[in-house]
Image (cartoon, rainbow, N blue to C red):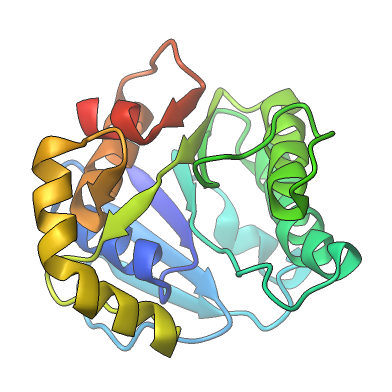
Length: 219
Protein backbone atom coordinates (compact mmCIF):
# COMPACT_ATOMS: atom_id res chain seq x y z
CA UNK A 1 0.00 0.00 0.00
CA UNK A 2 1.18 3.50 -0.87
CA UNK A 3 0.06 6.31 1.44
CA UNK A 4 0.01 10.09 1.13
CA UNK A 5 -0.15 11.95 4.44
CA UNK A 6 -1.11 15.57 5.05
CA UNK A 7 -0.29 17.12 8.42
CA UNK A 8 2.62 14.86 9.31
CA UNK A 9 4.22 17.41 11.66
CA UNK A 10 1.12 17.79 13.87
CA UNK A 11 0.51 15.60 16.89
CA UNK A 12 -1.92 13.21 15.21
CA UNK A 13 0.06 13.22 11.98
CA UNK A 14 3.29 12.35 13.77
CA UNK A 15 1.62 9.31 15.30
CA UNK A 16 0.07 8.23 12.00
CA UNK A 17 3.39 8.62 10.18
CA UNK A 18 5.13 6.47 12.78
CA UNK A 19 2.62 3.65 12.32
CA UNK A 20 2.86 3.87 8.53
CA UNK A 21 6.65 3.61 8.58
CA UNK A 22 6.49 0.61 10.96
CA UNK A 23 3.81 -1.24 8.98
CA UNK A 24 5.22 -3.95 6.72
CA UNK A 25 2.31 -3.59 4.28
CA UNK A 26 3.08 0.07 3.62
CA UNK A 27 5.44 0.31 0.68
CA UNK A 28 5.95 4.07 0.75
CA UNK A 29 4.70 7.22 2.44
CA UNK A 30 4.56 10.65 0.84
CA UNK A 31 4.12 13.56 3.24
CA UNK A 32 2.85 16.89 1.94
CA UNK A 33 2.96 19.94 4.17
CA UNK A 34 4.27 23.40 4.81
CA UNK A 35 7.24 22.11 6.82
CA UNK A 36 9.50 19.04 6.59
CA UNK A 37 9.17 16.30 9.19
CA UNK A 38 12.91 16.12 9.90
CA UNK A 39 12.78 12.31 9.67
CA UNK A 40 14.87 10.02 7.50
CA UNK A 41 13.46 6.67 6.39
CA UNK A 42 13.77 4.65 3.19
CA UNK A 43 9.97 4.53 2.88
CA UNK A 44 9.52 8.26 3.38
CA UNK A 45 9.32 10.88 0.64
CA UNK A 46 8.46 14.50 1.38
CA UNK A 47 7.09 17.47 -0.51
CA UNK A 48 7.20 20.87 1.16
CA UNK A 49 4.28 22.82 -0.27
CA UNK A 50 3.40 26.16 1.27
CA UNK A 51 0.07 26.55 -0.56
CA UNK A 52 -2.09 23.47 -0.06
CA UNK A 53 -5.09 25.01 -1.79
CA UNK A 54 -3.39 24.59 -5.18
CA UNK A 55 -1.55 21.32 -5.82
CA UNK A 56 -1.26 21.71 -9.60
CA UNK A 57 2.54 21.98 -9.53
CA UNK A 58 2.90 18.62 -7.75
CA UNK A 59 -0.04 16.75 -9.28
CA UNK A 60 2.15 14.21 -11.10
CA UNK A 61 3.80 13.28 -7.81
CA UNK A 62 0.41 12.61 -6.21
CA UNK A 63 -0.60 9.84 -8.63
CA UNK A 64 -0.60 6.16 -7.80
CA UNK A 65 -1.56 6.24 -4.11
CA UNK A 66 -3.94 3.85 -2.38
CA UNK A 67 -4.80 5.94 0.67
CA UNK A 68 -4.71 9.50 1.95
CA UNK A 69 -4.57 10.22 5.67
CA UNK A 70 -5.55 13.85 6.18
CA UNK A 71 -4.45 14.97 9.64
CA UNK A 72 -4.24 18.71 9.12
CA UNK A 73 -6.20 20.85 11.51
CA UNK A 74 -6.16 24.05 13.53
CA UNK A 75 -7.90 25.23 16.67
CA UNK A 76 -10.84 27.54 16.08
CA UNK A 77 -9.85 29.63 19.10
CA UNK A 78 -9.53 33.30 18.14
CA UNK A 79 -10.76 32.71 14.57
CA UNK A 80 -13.89 33.93 12.85
CA UNK A 81 -16.09 31.36 11.14
CA UNK A 82 -14.92 32.59 7.74
CA UNK A 83 -11.25 32.22 8.73
CA UNK A 84 -11.79 28.79 10.23
CA UNK A 85 -13.81 27.60 7.25
CA UNK A 86 -11.05 28.68 4.85
CA UNK A 87 -8.51 26.44 6.59
CA UNK A 88 -10.80 23.60 7.62
CA UNK A 89 -13.25 23.30 4.73
CA UNK A 90 -11.76 25.03 1.70
CA UNK A 91 -8.21 23.71 2.04
CA UNK A 92 -9.36 20.17 2.83
CA UNK A 93 -11.71 20.09 -0.15
CA UNK A 94 -9.06 21.51 -2.48
CA UNK A 95 -6.78 18.63 -1.53
CA UNK A 96 -9.52 15.99 -1.68
CA UNK A 97 -10.92 17.12 -5.03
CA UNK A 98 -7.42 17.01 -6.53
CA UNK A 99 -6.70 13.55 -5.15
CA UNK A 100 -9.99 11.96 -6.21
CA UNK A 101 -9.31 13.00 -9.82
CA UNK A 102 -5.80 11.57 -9.72
CA UNK A 103 -6.60 8.44 -7.65
CA UNK A 104 -10.29 7.48 -7.91
CA UNK A 105 -9.53 4.12 -6.30
CA UNK A 106 -8.15 5.81 -3.18
CA UNK A 107 -9.39 5.55 0.40
CA UNK A 108 -9.54 8.98 2.09
CA UNK A 109 -9.39 9.24 5.88
CA UNK A 110 -10.12 12.61 7.50
CA UNK A 111 -9.51 13.50 11.15
CA UNK A 112 -12.29 15.66 12.58
CA UNK A 113 -13.21 15.40 16.26
CA UNK A 114 -15.76 14.25 18.79
CA UNK A 115 -18.77 16.55 18.77
CA UNK A 116 -18.68 17.29 15.04
CA UNK A 117 -22.11 18.48 13.87
CA UNK A 118 -23.31 16.54 10.81
CA UNK A 119 -26.46 18.69 10.63
CA UNK A 120 -24.30 21.78 9.96
CA UNK A 121 -26.87 23.83 11.87
CA UNK A 122 -25.74 23.66 15.49
CA UNK A 123 -24.61 26.53 17.71
CA UNK A 124 -20.94 25.51 17.92
CA UNK A 125 -18.99 27.10 15.07
CA UNK A 126 -16.14 24.61 14.73
CA UNK A 127 -18.53 21.66 14.89
CA UNK A 128 -20.68 23.08 12.07
CA UNK A 129 -17.65 23.66 9.84
CA UNK A 130 -16.25 20.21 10.56
CA UNK A 131 -19.65 18.69 9.84
CA UNK A 132 -19.87 20.52 6.54
CA UNK A 133 -16.40 19.24 5.62
CA UNK A 134 -17.27 15.66 6.54
CA UNK A 135 -20.47 15.74 4.48
CA UNK A 136 -18.70 17.18 1.44
CA UNK A 137 -15.93 14.56 1.63
CA UNK A 138 -18.44 11.72 1.87
CA UNK A 139 -20.05 12.91 -1.36
CA UNK A 140 -16.81 12.70 -3.35
CA UNK A 141 -16.37 9.58 -5.54
CA UNK A 142 -13.46 8.01 -3.64
CA UNK A 143 -13.43 4.23 -3.38
CA UNK A 144 -14.22 4.87 0.28
CA UNK A 145 -13.95 7.72 2.77
CA UNK A 146 -13.84 7.62 6.56
CA UNK A 147 -14.33 10.38 9.09
CA UNK A 148 -12.35 9.85 12.31
CA UNK A 149 -13.75 11.64 15.38
CA UNK A 150 -11.28 11.13 18.23
CA UNK A 151 -11.97 12.73 21.61
CA UNK A 152 -8.99 13.00 24.01
CA UNK A 153 -5.80 11.74 22.34
CA UNK A 154 -2.81 10.61 24.36
CA UNK A 155 0.46 11.17 22.45
CA UNK A 156 2.81 8.18 22.64
CA UNK A 157 6.33 7.26 21.50
CA UNK A 158 7.78 10.74 21.73
CA UNK A 159 5.01 12.42 19.73
CA UNK A 160 4.60 16.07 20.75
CA UNK A 161 2.03 18.72 19.93
CA UNK A 162 3.30 21.83 18.14
CA UNK A 163 0.97 23.92 20.30
CA UNK A 164 2.86 24.62 23.52
CA UNK A 165 -0.14 24.98 25.81
CA UNK A 166 -1.67 21.76 24.41
CA UNK A 167 1.50 19.92 25.35
CA UNK A 168 1.52 21.41 28.83
CA UNK A 169 -2.02 20.15 29.32
CA UNK A 170 -1.07 16.69 28.06
CA UNK A 171 1.91 16.58 30.43
CA UNK A 172 -0.26 17.52 33.41
CA UNK A 173 -3.08 15.13 32.51
CA UNK A 174 -0.86 12.20 31.49
CA UNK A 175 -1.82 9.94 34.45
CA UNK A 176 -5.52 10.62 33.88
CA UNK A 177 -5.22 9.92 30.15
CA UNK A 178 -3.45 6.64 30.86
CA UNK A 179 -6.20 5.59 33.27
CA UNK A 180 -8.97 6.90 31.05
CA UNK A 181 -7.66 4.96 28.07
CA UNK A 182 -8.29 1.73 29.99
CA UNK A 183 -11.52 2.66 31.75
CA UNK A 184 -13.24 4.94 29.24
CA UNK A 185 -12.31 3.94 25.67
CA UNK A 186 -15.27 5.95 24.40
CA UNK A 187 -13.47 9.13 25.47
CA UNK A 188 -9.72 8.47 25.21
CA UNK A 189 -7.53 7.08 22.44
CA UNK A 190 -3.82 7.34 21.54
CA UNK A 191 -1.81 8.48 18.55
CA UNK A 192 -0.81 4.84 18.06
CA UNK A 193 -4.40 3.60 18.01
CA UNK A 194 -5.47 6.32 15.58
CA UNK A 195 -2.64 5.41 13.20
CA UNK A 196 -3.33 1.69 13.34
CA UNK A 197 -7.06 2.21 12.86
CA UNK A 198 -6.42 4.34 9.77
CA UNK A 199 -4.27 1.63 8.25
CA UNK A 200 -6.91 -0.98 9.01
CA UNK A 201 -9.78 0.87 7.31
CA UNK A 202 -7.53 1.59 4.33
CA UNK A 203 -6.78 -2.12 3.97
CA UNK A 204 -10.22 -3.52 4.74
CA UNK A 205 -13.24 -1.51 3.68
CA UNK A 206 -15.64 -1.20 6.62
CA UNK A 207 -19.34 -0.48 6.95
CA UNK A 208 -19.11 2.61 9.18
CA UNK A 209 -18.07 5.80 7.44
CA UNK A 210 -18.03 7.95 10.57
CA UNK A 211 -15.97 6.52 13.43
CA UNK A 212 -16.33 7.92 16.92
CA UNK A 213 -13.62 7.49 19.57
CA UNK A 214 -14.86 4.06 20.71
CA UNK A 215 -14.98 2.88 17.07
CA UNK A 216 -11.39 3.98 16.47
CA UNK A 217 -10.24 2.02 19.51
CA UNK A 218 -12.27 -1.02 18.43
CA UNK A 219 -10.56 -0.98 15.03
